[in-house]
Length: 444
Image 1 (cartoon, rainbow, N blue to C red):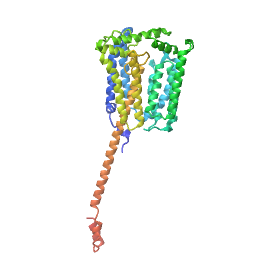
Image 2: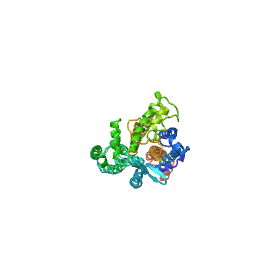
Image 3: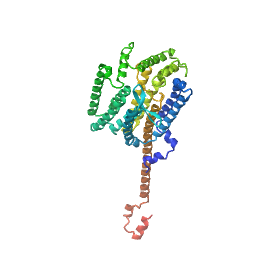
Image 4: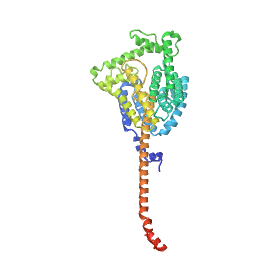
């Protein structure tokens, strides 16, 4: 009887690559195509600076590299994703964040990138994957709330909290999104009330203390980027006042206004076509934070509805796939990815619409290798989870057929044996038969 791995390995590479949830593959390819179209227009300022189309080529190269990563990760077994991937992330994330503190690179005091072999890496993008995997491991493979796992969830909260606090020092919005995600994810995972209440109390307490300190302490007492956060809050409270912040923050306010103007310039939300944006060169972050505004300006109601619709479809497809899983661990991983990336996209869409101002990439659309690679890895994990479930069902069906065939063969053999066996009861009524005649009769 073949094992599950032997059944899976008999399939060709193409079969394994296209296996899994085909709708997820279609969604991923749709992201790639639309990302190429929108970014190619939004990145015009970088094209002008470079004097060539190299930025567009670079984005396409990022997408191709992301596709390769997605295909490779989708082939990892569910056992590897449960036993080894969380441990590797537990080793890698503290090292990457420590590297960020020592040799981080960024702008205006926001150290968000590190360079590995000449490639910029944003640890916060990989942190999203780590939070999902660690949470699923803490929940175990049980479908019900397990009070005995409070220690695992407490460790999850402590480890994640320390790393999030470090990342939030350079990007507060990312830290807030992560904390909000952990709260929602804990409810989905049915975290033990004992540890979840502790998490909520500590989070709310620290948020209140931090908020009071941020708004009451003298600016000279505020550490790091705290003065920047305060300036943004004050500017949002009073749009007409000039908050005492850094010069870049005032420029960012201008970017926020231009983002609104880009949306307003799309008269009656009628598409004007790719490359027809009037504000793509004025928006310094048109290819990242404000890519949604450019999409609306150029594609009108199509850009307004299609981009959010893709993330709604993302959530729906993955939650539907999670309901099909026979493994609670795989289902929890899928639910985690169905929450964290659409949540991030919601923040970016709100920024593009001018509701508030913060730096968040739009998954699979914003220009940059870290975001595309991390999101592609997440897609690979999700496709791999769906592939593992289908492989398990294929194996289970094959074993069921083999067992049915074995039982049928056993019944046929037993019937044949009964048909060929002598009628012992009939022979017992002929005591006059000699031993030789009895043996002869019994063989016939």
